[in-house]
Every structure is written in C-alpha cells, then in structure tokens.
Image (cartoon, rainbow, N blue to C red; front, side):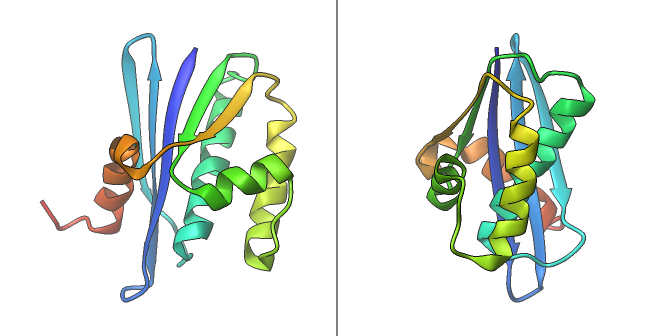
Length: 133
C-alpha cells in the first residue's frame, strides 16, 4: 500500500506557485517539493499536485497498487468524485487527472483537515518560499 499526501500553494504577491507531495511506502518516505513553472491560484496548484503525482506513479509503474491519497482541498476531492467542476481554469487539469485515474483501479482520494496534511503543506511552501528557514 502507498499512502500519499498532496498539497498546492500559491503566492499572489509574487505570482508563484508550488506543490508538495509526501509518499509513504513500506516505512520509506519520498518527498517532492517543486515550484510550478507558471503562476496558478491555490486551487489550481492543488489539482496540479494530483496531476504530477499521477504522472509519477505511471512512470514508476504503480498503477495496480492500493493507493490512499489525502488532500486538504475539498474542491479537488469533490471535483474528482463528481468528475466535474464549474471553474473553467480547473476543468482542463481535472480532465487530465481523470484520464490518468482510469489506469488506477485502487486509487482512493480522501479529504483530510489541514492539520493532517502538514507534511505536504511544508513541502509546497518550501518551494514557494525557498529563502525562508
């Protein structure tokens, strides 16, 4: 089983955005902290965190694994469950995620409160604010 925590972050003042992904498998952690190449709002960054995760899992050939993915974004979780979003800027990323999810028979996305997603949040903020200690 693979347990994953994802988060996105953005800073409208600096027009920057980043993602954080924390993967835990058999007691081993993989941490991904990446700035996004363009500015995205916080919700878009959340969708992109899921997209980056899914692409990575496909590259690592982990589609058949049981994957429990956690996000503190209700918009993301609800959009995936409903397979729909009203927001045009989210729709394109949602469609890409849904296309990738067709390859994952045991992928479960669950909403968690912010306090249970601190690891992914810190990873996203690490790339968003690289000069902060």
